[in-house]
Length: 221
Image 1 (tube, rainbow, N blue to C red):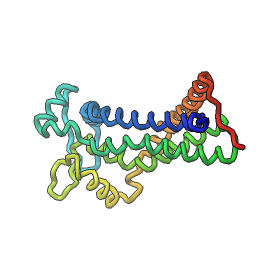
Image 2 (cartoon, one colour; image 1 turned 180 degrees about the vertical axis):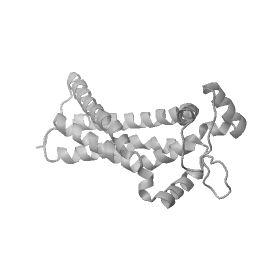
Image 3 (cartoon, rainbow, N blue to C red; image 1 turned 90 degrees about the horizontal axis):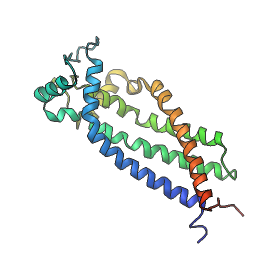
Image 4 (spheres, rainbow, N blue to C red; image 1 turned 135 degrees about the horizontal axis):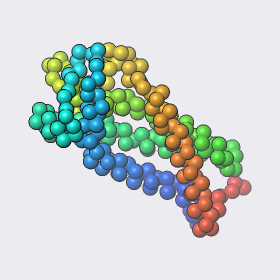
């Protein structure tokens, strides 16, 4: 019974429950906010000069006009361009926690407890690994959100579903495998430090909470 109510078992249970909840929230968030991200992406890139002739320029007067033109010219489904890679990116969190918990268990086999530096480092490594594995989806997500990008043989404006795989293939064919990772350095700088600090705070709060309720970390005999 003591082992069932140990510090480690409850930490793992909380981590699993939190991951499931965040995955569910992530899916809902993607479905609700993708139209805003599509419009935001197009407004940010409007007026930019592209050397790629496959990109069709846009002319929006503002947020409302952007929504109106997208629905009128491309159909309401175009507001959810990029949903498929966005949903796949929700699993970035699960991958991140999987690597974090795995690295944490390996370290705890060699030492009784983790220092703040240990937590910070494995949190950073876990996030960097998850970001590297899922970054190609970020690239495709941005292209699909922009929407006015012609790459397929029929010269149609790209939609959303099978084009996710098609864009990955075309990106590699045109620019090589590194074409899927353009901008990765900036993304790592943006997310890794934040995730490492999040894991550090998470471990501190978890330990403090379980100390208050009287649960102790299990010791090896």
